[in-house]
Image 1 (cartoon, rainbow, N blue to C red):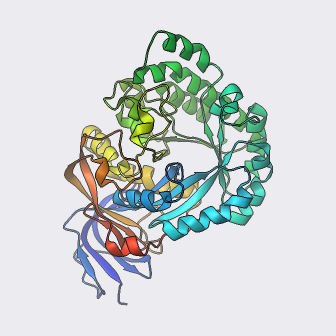
Image 2: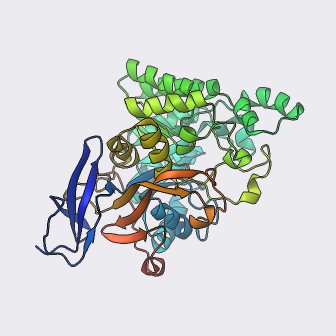
Length: 453
């Protein structure tokens, strides 16, 4: 057998298993062989990895491509992802009727993207829930997200009038019938927020900490309890997306102790690294808010003990000019390019989190949860989506080098230790040494990720 590519002398990071010396042989876009580190099988091309880490390509299950520049986001944000070692993403598609808009969105993504892309359905109307099974069958989308932060007046301001506990309950029943279905839920009790926000604004507060105080941890925890309780009654697997606080994490643990219905937990790099006192200020405005150092420490405990299942970035590529002042600033922040460096710096180097645990949280677990059977592992037959990582490489985060439509990063100016130096999608080098190769710019090769039966 002649390989297309042989990656020699690497340290293979096997999710939740360990780190071992080895080499990987690639043929026809898939992993064809796992070998001793000094293997010399015939190959069209050989790359010496010089003992660096070889991890599965990252799967970011939580991005919002199209919320920056809808015409070009699948190009710019996919490149940004590739620079960060991310080879697959699941983006949220939220329109009046996804049956009408998904074909065009899917074609745009495949035409522009240098990485693989799939979708979640954003549930904001009863039509979305009622057509969930149809969308799953037609487009291979087995996951959806319901936005509890858009109930009542908060939803009305966005044009959403049907989000309530009844829609949550109905969404669970419908998701339960989708093969491999999982319902993600944004947990914040938005109805209480005005009672906390208005006094802060009257007092003239405009700091990042005020954003945390207007939507404190117990509002998130209360909603986690509500979602877990409804999940127990309906039998629907649920995923608490972008969980941000110690108190909410404890609610997730309580549900798992008392119920057999799966409840998974996703957190984000910003909740593992940034506090409400961060120098980023309004640049770090996000929902739920970044919180205290105690919450950061609790979430890292959740990473280690398995309460946290996946890590997604909640990447939203907007401009710095939209983030000037805390109360008027847009929600969300970019992060797909810095996902792995933040986890290596704050997790592996600062806290001793095992590399294999980081690999599980950033690849294998999301692939398993969302039905991406060819992703997330260094194993024969899987897609040759791989990222070569120098764990000791230090770089200062510079938004200009990250290829995103966003011209800022909440981590800008921070020096992080541990960066990808090469990213491969099905054996093709799509990023190397902090740059996108010209051939990838000219001819991207991302594919659509259809999931479910």
